[in-house]
Image 1 (cartoon, rainbow over the protein chains, first blue to last red):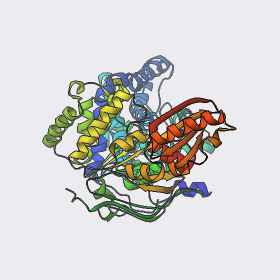
Image 2: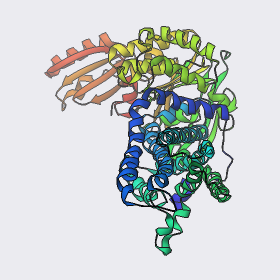
Image 3: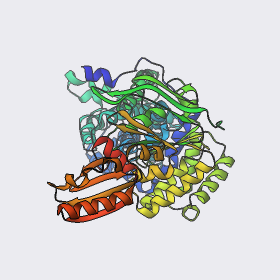
Length: 268
Length: 315
């Protein structure tokens, strides 16, 4: 317990943030991204495309209808969310861990007027940006397939940004306690993949056994899908506000945690 | 600009503890504007802990630490704006070019674009990196990376330059190149704090130094003073039968300042090298002790350290 106390030391203090410097950290990462995006984009982008193909066109032939939709209409909007989730999560685990540990980028930054809080907030911004970017690129693919039915879809960046910000926060929390790269395998196997499979991307959560039907409600992916799917299909109802509120609240409540946890790991 | 003669750093009863381990045990020192101040000691002596407190990375456990007359714990951002840090391990942006590394770093100091480009060009010129300006950092050699790391620390025109083991791991050529540049910075009036376990580095660059051992200050002064105080001008290294060698120096105490056993050698420190050498030669002949070798050399800081700690710095 004492150890946990140390991990969260300073959680009740006000973060030491200078937004202009947070933006410098963000733009540093963006600058590196511009040099490496060609190699990266395959990794994050081709995979959901393969899912869309295999599931939508292959498996989809055997699925007649879900809630009055063809299977690919049901699946494609959700893959926008999951592809954004994966890109942010990879970046804020493997990517941030490399900058934090192996490259010691964080150390270099905090030797300047930049504070550790600025660094981590800059990372969160960058993870959020990257998720939205990859999600929107996938959105274009979905649009090319003729699956976008409503101008509401132009608002997708809003739920996407909220969702991937949460994944940036959660991933950085894991990164702050990760002993090595191998430990990220657990993060993906225990949290990210189950979310991908059971949070309403591939089938409606009503099909889950009644005892565990509440579980998707606890995940950010579920709430994002619940907003994005109606936006793409033009079936927006007031209930999306509840999902958006869930996302905003979750992000607001958790954002302080990775700031203190990364700081407590690096600064002793 | 720092006024010469005013304290840039002052540490008083400075303590750093990691859990139960006390890395810095209440040390006291001050660094004056314009000087190069050395922290000398073996690996693990607590040098890096001191340095990390000075640039606000590591919070102090107790005591007082002022940089530019301000408490580092209160004014970290303002103080860091006036410091340049060369860390022990390179933490450049490996994916970016040499020039971009400087420009990105300038951004953290909120230096205007135009100014930072101009300064970057000057720094590339000064560190002899102009030709490499477009190269990606991960393809540079260790020596070039180090030069860039030092150059990067100059982007904010620091009033205080902190160098933590700046030449560790470099080949002799690269090391001399770095020393040359640091000397030029010193001549230009930059205050420097340097940690090193290379005694030659300390002798070459430092005006004053403290020797740190196990978190405590063991000695302080100018390199010359320390050598004079503890070991004199020369060292006579003798290789002889270790059972009988002590009798060689009998009756020569007025010539010998200190003595030390180092491995198989007996080292005699003296201010009268030639005379001592001759007398030892005679004594060996008279006593019938054969000298395997017998060598007179100038003393250095390493000798001071050896005499003070009985340990070598490399260990």
